[in-house]
Amino acid sequence: MQYFPSSQLGDYLTVYEEIVRGTIDLAQITIPESIDARLGAPYLPFYALNYDDVKRLYAPDSFLCQQIGAITEEANVKFLGIVLEGFIGMGYIKEPTDMFTPGTNKHVKSRSPSMVTFFQPMEDLGFGPVSIPYGEVPTAIQTKVVDGWVGGTPNMNYAWVGEMINYMYVNYIFAEATSYVMSEKTLEKLTPEDQEIVIGVFQEQSMKSFTEAESNEKNYMKKLTDDYGVEVIEFTPEQIKAYADFVREETWPKLEDLLTKELMDGFRKEVGLL
Image 1 (cartoon, one colour):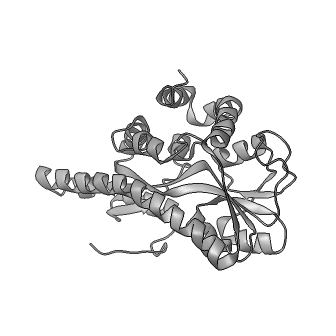
Image 2 (cartoon, rainbow, N blue to C red):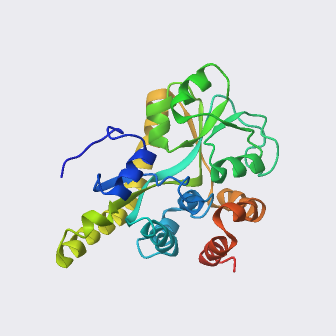
């Protein structure tokens, strides 16, 4: 294998297109939802509420992964599993108002990715979302275009804006979930035995990522405080559930046009809502 880190082969859309063509064999990327809106499903807000949920809901044999695999298969791409990089929280310069009550005006401007699965829940929860590209987040916070952001795990907050923010809220609003994908053209070059080995190895590593992410999160929450003096506020399970109940009732129906009602009902069934 020859490895190309740091987007050396292009952004995730370019890489995915090359995977489809077979000119790139394997990748760990965010699968572009511009290909099919349903591919944004791994970023469904408050699908998993903790790491135990992730091990079930994002596992290689889960409903979510089966659905993603069926969609990518239509483009001759083999989906090999989700890589959990952690749970996304929120980093701010100032404290939002009434932080633990979903739906109230938080009186902050919050950078959000433009994806509807991000933007809509931030709007519904009361965080005043502003669509700003990821690369412009530090400048936007420094120049006070926004008061903070959603889009980063504790380690991403540490590396990207640790010197700028004063508060980091760990509320598990989104899973930071990239994917292992492989060109079917590449897979077909292997013997059936080797295909089984390759698929098995990536699925095993997918499951391993869930445990590694949890350990990594605890480490960087501490580093944010120790190295930058950031106050890290962890939501309690009850506070996470209050947010989740609100988003599942208020926001999930609004995502049906994007992800389809059929898929959303499948997710509802998986979390016990149907």
